[in-house]
Amino acid sequence: MPDFDRARTFYGTLFGWEVERGPEDLHGYASCTKDGHVVAGIMPALDAGQPSAWTTYLATDDLDATLARAREAGGTMLTEPIDVGDRGRMALVADPGGAVVGFWQGLSHTGFELANGPGSVTWNENMSRAWDQNKQFYNAVLGLEYDDLPGTGYATFKADGNVAGGSPSC
Image (tube, rainbow, N blue to C red; front, side, top):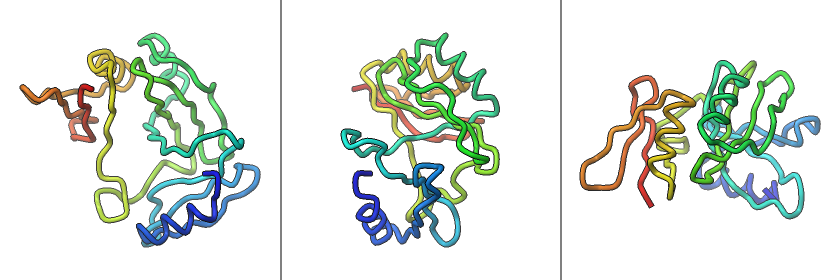
């Protein structure tokens, strides 16, 4: 975020989040909480030209193995693995359609603690012009399964048998 304090005020007012600036050794990364539960993370932009964006991070038990599968399935590495203190390890990848996705191997921080309620994550979309390639990519990398909704150009994706989001063809 180019203006961390403004973003903190905006999301605090909109969603009722509490956001405290994090430690400088983590570039000011802060956990956003709702009713005492982590719901998101936010950090200042690392350089002036960086646009503001939300990034979805998908959990993995083995970041290196996940990145190897991502490379093999046609992903483009945007960062090599980065250690985030004692919180975990992360990397950013562009999928075959060009969408940026993060992969997170949690240590002391395993991700959000509240979902599917007001002020928390409820649904994820992967908007892609490479619909079939992306479905193959996420299946190969994470084992996500897809259910096409006939005649709609839309599919839901499941993680561990649970619907976690959707993917329209664009």
